[in-house]
Length: 419
Image (cartoon, rainbow, N blue to C red; front, side, top):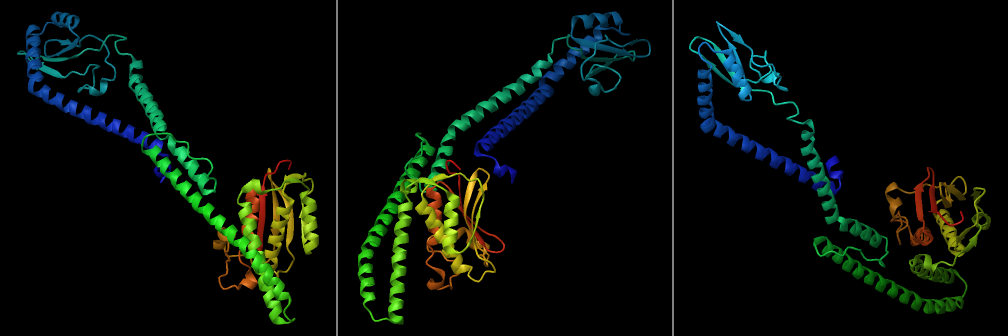
């Protein structure tokens, strides 16, 4: 599981190291086997014959003077042990050789043994190298080279995969509806072509969304005139339940068209706002007084730059939503303004039944209603919280919706200038 969470760059570098290690092991293992086979087939008989000649040169019984002369002339150590004499060889230590000495009593890893005619045991082995002949610093050279190669491999992989960062950032922008900035990945390889295809797909989606919005705006504008005429004609009908039903339905259609037009205008983001300096505390208290709910304003919040008409729209929609779904709550809703770290939260908390947890993420979607059996007259058309989200996003914030246990809390959270 941890390996899956690693970035693709580190996984490729790890693969490079694993392949390098496997190649080294296979190469060294094959070389060792080849050398061992060559030693047994060709070199060992030659060395054995040479050692036989050296043992014969020492005489019988072996002469210690000749052994010392041999040690002075060649990088070997000679040990003689027998019934007549004992010669321990020159006293030079061989590093980390004790574990390799078959007898465990000597410092030299003797590998070849001969027995003279008079019963003396003569052992030949390599002598310790001269002081300073092997530097410990040399052991760090392969590790340093491996680290340098790893760093170069990571830098190269990072350069190859650099377009992935741009592609990820571009996909995130496109997912948020920002199609104005293409992916900056000018490469001729597969990743560059992938970025170009994603840009082309985003341009196509943007064009389709723009066409849909244009069509929706045109239809909405065209419906306004016949709705206005129908409303005037309805007013001429005799008073009664039929007239009230027609007027109510026409009013709902008028409000629906107005909400659709406002949603499309707010889709332009901050460009759709008419900002000015706003006292948020006074705005909340005014909306609470008009609606007969409780205000909860944190003191000391400075005036901010915002669009007061759109903030009133947000407060009006959350109040309407609370009236629909929390009318039988034990206490009235609370309009609040509070600080949340470096941000501000403006919204409403009711004390009704709340909504199912799985519906929270969909409440701000257009035309979504959590209870599919609810009638339109009781539950609205599902554009109120969608407009609240549009208002929040146009101000550079987000719409936070959560179950408050009991009730539902809807808040616009953002960091305005001057807060």
